[in-house]
Amino acid sequence: MERTFNGVKDKQNDRIRRIAELADLYLAAYKIRNPDSATFAESALRHVKRLQGKKIQAEISDKIMNTYQTERLSACSKMKAM
Image (cartoon, rainbow, N blue to C red):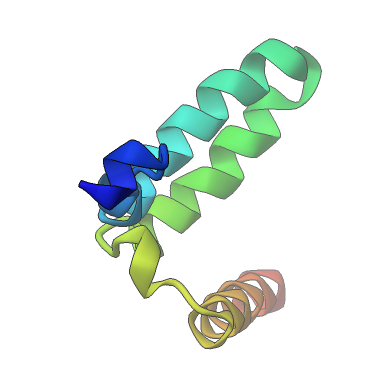
């Protein structure tokens, strides 16, 4: 009741959203603001969704993002070496 009275909203629903859903929302807004680079953003977010998409927002930490970046850079290095 105190939260309602003081205008504090429970943001639990925001914290339990999947990364894939957030990526889709971000991309939709990005395409409007930056139509010329939307293809690049789609490609980048495709990988984010593939590797992190099932996680919820509350699970994402700097350690998880560093691991993701390392995996992506490693994959790119392997592709270049072929």
